[in-house]
Image (cartoon, rainbow, N blue to C red; front, top):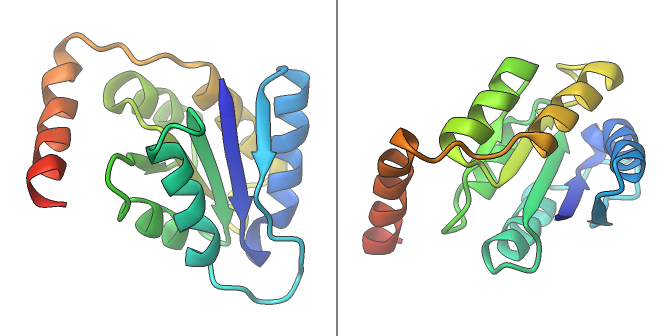
Length: 148
């Protein structure tokens, strides 16, 4: 698995924690910034990462901002992206098993570093169940193909 990760200024600390986790799990990743504490625009980070996941350069992507909301909204504008905004481990597991999410968004102002690590670990290590969920995910893909 190869993961693209990025944050805006509101998610720098948790992004560093998630990178440490991926090192521990021996998951390959590339960090797309930001490297600052001053205000930046989250679409400048979310959209390029989502495009890299959508075009197959990366298997999955992780985005962090203050709440995770802006990053998830931006990422989900990219065809082929199923970015889940997650702030608990139950949802992290469910979105992989049921929705085959290929991107994860979290908010640093919402979850602490320890919980963020657990969410990311759960999301990174959970496989898609397929089965009865395939039809539902397929309907999303079909809509995208017709409308985006």
